[in-house]
Image 1: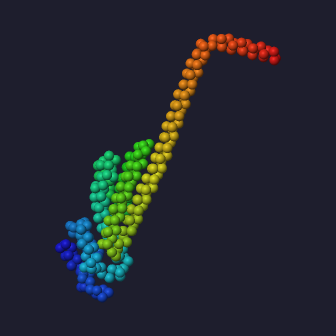
Image 2: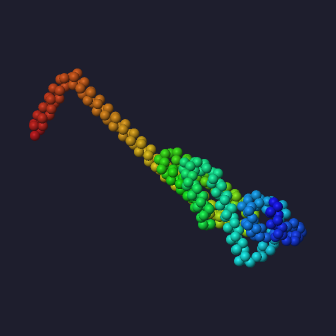
Length: 280
């Protein structure tokens, strides 16, 4: 708090009257951010909680001159603030991924070495894909894991669970960004593209999860159809064997019980031949 006060005091102006109310301290937001970046505590979220608290109760306020800065200066301010935000966001996402071990089943789906590599990419990737690249890579590995088990009906349930866990992680990132926007006014619009990216990642995960579920359901249904067909074919084969056996056994019994039946059959055969001759 003392360091924060010293930084703010350095950039504070004489209190002004704003709409009939005297402001206690007026400061330039980008100057505060600039000094915090150079300090050892600039990554401390608690520092920004203090800033937000003091701003919300009127101890701090943003100088009206912010409205009149030229476009070039505003662009530079937004650029620096965005870079600053991204660095904090990288740390936040890294900690989230380390905490949410259930997403990769404690190394069963994604190994520790793979997670380490993904986290390295998170902290080294271009600012335009530093979120999408690692998150989608995690989902791809989860997707591949269950693709190998796609004939198992439960794979749909488990993949859906992992998708929801990733989506919950994305929701937590968005909540953090929305909270942090309080510290970025009047440049809080710099988070719009980041939130849009997260929404796109969310949609992509849901789309691919739905495609996987449809494919898995189709494969499962085809598997069931094949199993039912095989079962029916086996039953018919057994039934035919049983009928053949029954026919053979009954024929033996009939021949034993009625030996004259063979003579009758021969007589009928002879009669048929003679009748045919007469007809000719």
